[in-house]
Image (cartoon, rainbow, N blue to C red):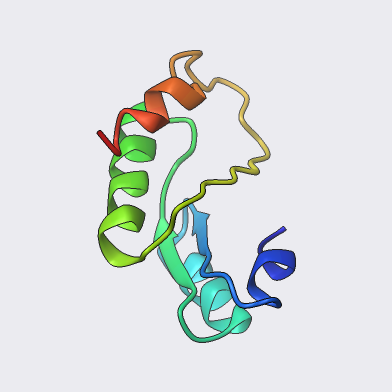
Length: 86
């Protein structure tokens, strides 16, 4: 998904629970791609991560793709994430 956004020139943020893995994935997609440590199962981490993306980029859209969300709180909804933007 990120490659499809980055190739035509969009900025993207790549997340992983592992900061090194996120950094390497972001760097592999090119300049301007953020690599952030974030556990999508933790609502506070998601809100903080989205806030960081808004602060560090000029993003005007958010696309979320996550896997391995077993045990994720139901409140990690798009509405909860959107509240990070204000």
